[in-house]
Length: 432
Image 1 (cartoon, one colour):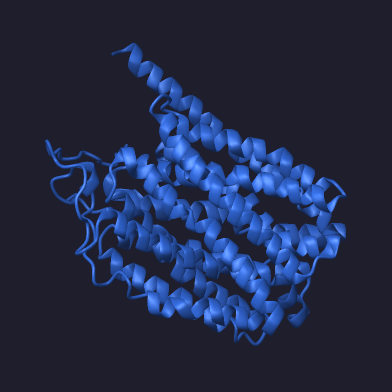
Image 2 (image 1 turned 30 degrees about the vertical axis):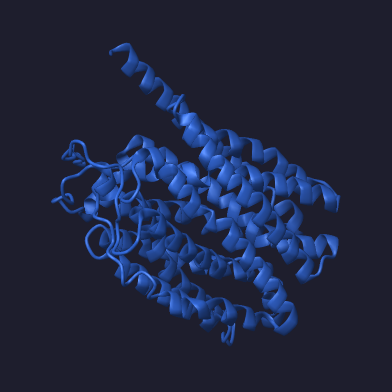
């Protein structure tokens, strides 16, 4: 059977870290990439805040509304493997700049959509652009930080998810209330047109630099390597668990505002403010705490990352079910906030596992394949499926209960990975 080569060339006594780009330390690069990631998620989440006004303006059914997010995913996950392949071969900063420009143009054009079809086309364009950044950004960080600091660095990078998502809800609900949903997209997309050039003056880190490789791996990845990644057992468990997790998480985010407005009479601004506070507050604290705590725990337990993922996800499932099964607005808000807090504990560890369970030369490809898999089998279907079930049941309330079930599946897969890691480490100690 074909093997994926991962033989490194060790460099003795190499300093732990040095400048990776012209005029920038690894921390400086991390700050810039995190800022760009914030705008990445702001542009992605602004649509969730204004989905009800869009539905009313275009006179859509829930089933039609449910395809707004999958349209984004079509562009996102179909081009992710392509960008991952290019990211392991070409200049990563130029690919990132092109991606930022494309997603920003797509976001602005969404504000000018004349109907349902053009709205979906604009969201596909946004997906094209964001696929470039999502696949390549983490590989730049992985090549700038050694293993001991890598999870903390990626945790900081992924702090942009709750902050950017919260800003997307905030900007969308406030601008949408004041001037209409179209202006929310225009305002969200314009900054990216300038940000696209922010990385171009700097030199990117060499592939494998933080892993003591004397030079970039000479063997470049092939398309067969990309799909052969799924034969790696640990990587496969990470990705399939992440797919189930993403199915549920995006389902909550997409339909959450609509749920509060329909069943509890919240206005667009009130629903947006709730998700802004929950995602910014709970998400910021839990992403930071989960990432750094998992790093510290890993010094004593080699399965710390997978245990953090599995236990937090399994714990979130009953809180999410309780939130939607009850008839209390406060109960829903508390239950959903608790579930989101628990789910975001694993933001850093899950992405660290993706890049650490594969050879150095395939990091961008591994991130790309994970994006392809988690979205094709995860959130590509969840908003549309919930919308279809809402039409079938005549209510959104029973439809959303499929989401906690997905959390239980994802948490169970990560628990299998944790036991597998512990058993493997135990066998190594026994033969030492």
